[in-house]
Amino acid sequence: MKRHLTPLDNLVVNVDQALRTVFGKPQVTERPHPDADLKQSELSKEEARHVAGLMRINHAGEVCAQALYQGQALTAKLPNVREKMERAAQEENDHLAWCESRLKELGDNTSHLNPFWYAGSFAIGALAGLAGDKWSLGFVVETERQVVKHLDDHLQQLPPQDEKSRAVLEQMKEDEGRHATLALQAGGAELPTPVKKLMQTMSKIMTRTTYHI
Ligand SMILES: [Fe+2]
Ligand SMILES: [Fe+2]
Image (cartoon, rainbow, N blue to C red; front, side, top):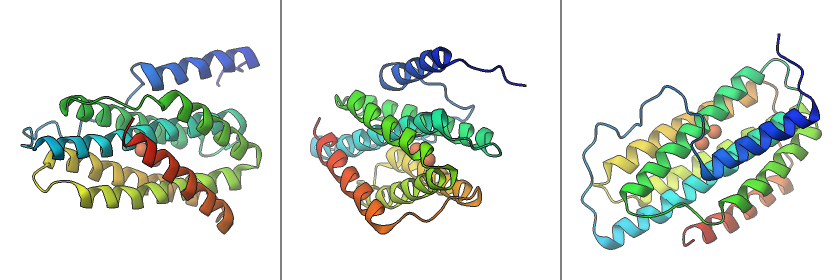
């Protein structure tokens, strides 16, 4: 049986996870980087800058995903799926690590706005958790679906020779699709259209700024 955590324990755990996600080495799974065996792609300066902009968006998206899962874990009950959700959150950390090393290879940096995205997404995740499990799971379903669409768009924008970035994004897309199915099967409800639209608007603001900074 798990030890009961006091509110102070919870706070310490959450601050630790936030700092690790934004500044440190988050806890990853045993999986290798999808692009580990591929050779460096030959990219022009402009291509490298564009791919780095895309990877910075994906990295920031993973910071948000991590914060959403952590915020939700704080308030949601999720008695039957907690373990699976924790595994999903750990897979988001893989994504975080993969995007970060790809950004480094491209000679670029992660977004300076990440602490801000983390804080906002954590609050949204906690609120979704308070709304009840079917809504918070529905929120995961919709988030993951939107991420899959957005990864598809990025996959199309990659220079054809950039096999490394492609391998990373394709594995991420597969994982996110699985996360959506998991949350749906766990009882996620279909969100009202205005909420979906609001989520799309927020992700647009995030992607447009993060591409540059
Ligand atoms: Fe992810
Ligand atoms: Fe995911």
